[in-house]
Image (cartoon, rainbow, N blue to C red; front, side):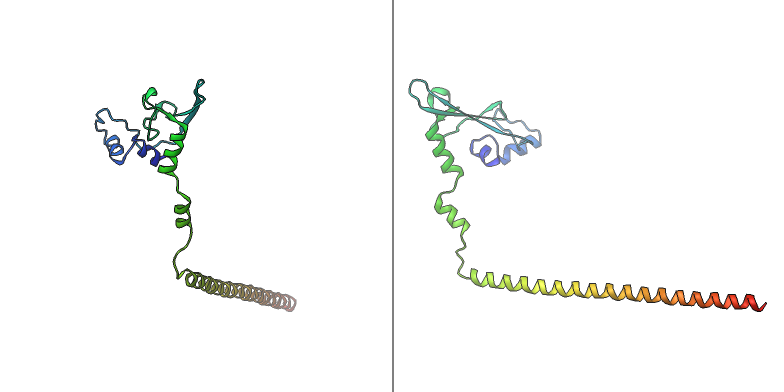
Length: 173
């Protein structure tokens, strides 16, 4: 939202700071930082005589957007523009060309193959280390459980022996 508001001169860092500091905006249009669920409403209409398409837009349904296009329609006080002008303005100001998109999305670094190999080697090393850590933890857990069971068995044997000694002591008396 912010790039659109900035392009259409509805917000800027300066006006947001003025709003935050509660300074006088001196009549300038400043919506500040977009609130939750802020929206743009684009209306497409057609001239009944010429069948030409026009676009109007509002911000949050109540603030008309001025300078929507580079060549605003004079008859509607700069709040409307021809669809083709709107499309050109959006394409030129907010969308990447095929060349820009390819440049941004394609690795052009000649060492990228080496980077891929080194990242694969790194992931391989990390997976081996994690496997070893998990193996050690599992072995430690098994050893702990076996030791606990052995201690329980020794305690049971000691208890049985103590009970036998108590039984003998009772019969001897």
